[in-house]
Image (tube, rainbow over all chains, first blue to last red; front, side, top):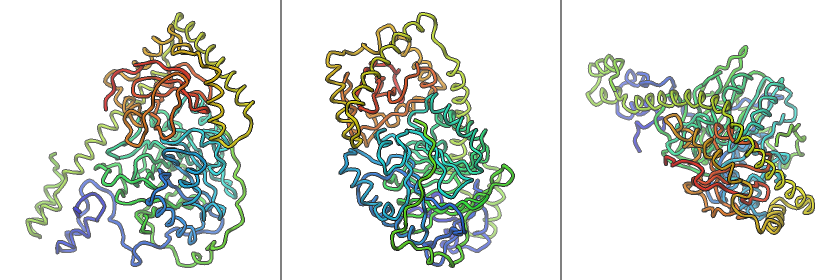
Length: 346
Length: 224
């Protein structure tokens, strides 16, 4: 492994390894604005989100459905995290089921690996990727309400609305619907999620510029704060772009393309050496996030703050106070959560 | 790339540290490359945004509009058949509905041939509109979108055999149909969709997962 490559190992640590003085280690990274990752004494395995009372807790996964060992190991880690951090909603950024999608395949590629979460009342909300059969919108556990694009407000969250977009096919009908829904939403937090990233440094796919041209003006116009996508099989947090919007690529929930991230100044954090998923928490004007790898290591964390229409971001997060994690554990199945309000598209 | 900011750091490092350390702190190469790619992307994104706005203004002439009306009539006839069969099948598990619907429609359309929906008089219009978005110096992003996920290219995809009433097979990836292309083509209702298989434009019934009709070589040569 090249210790100087990207952010896999921080320059500060690399400098120290080379036996250099702390003065050199403090020289800022050329062209970068980011502090090196902070190692936590416990290997970064603890939940860093604050778990505030009344907050919305959700998770994000993408490019999952292969039914292979990698997906199953990542799913097992999700369950471990959920026991400490009981998120209520899982948004899926597409490529939910690769290959066949017969009932037995749906069991193998979705229902079995995520069974503890499904049984525990986690509501999966899917969007469609380029490897998905569009008929997944009729699959009940994906909660799409038979629509290829739709919006929903999670239970108990008056101020947050998600928009599931079909980025494979952004036709006039969908754009008109999106404009209408974004305009009529009074939620402070408007969070679109879909498959093809508007910003990505992936060597294989990269930014979807046609999709960006169609969607970004609407996001900026209607004060979107955060956007989640997949498609590229790694984790990447993009520095705030137009409208101060923070974009994530979270496309390695069951697929991985090692070493696929190319050098880019628009990237704030990269991770392309293992699978991952994300947990998030929205409390008032703050959205906390944490990306966790298959082995349970925290690969990124931070908080977005909405301040008078603008968005600021701080990362990484310090460790959360140890208090409520254990007491919130849903080791036994929790009662099902309420059905979110769903506004259909098509 | 020349980086004037690196010089003071390099000097400082040389004074304080070993030459090896100086080499370490003065490595701007990868980041410069990244900045250059970012600048190229930004420039391209602006062109794509302008191209999309222009595409929304695209329109067919009088003769072409007549061809579009006939095409839409064929589309509506297909949809009427599809809805009738769907109602007859009733409520089943999603993959069972897809299978039953495909069987019913292909049986009813056994004599349909290529060009029966994409009528010969409308095909030149489709080719022209697609070429306007996929040819030329600002079309790189649109071409990339078509190539990505195209079952003729995607490594995770099974191949698709294009024929009228043919199945869009399980495990076949879907190309992204660029927003600029969709902005120009005649609008069709859900669950019908336009899709590219290599350079062929297919009309897909996404509910039955069958190919309703297609236009061969509808797209120009694409970058890979």
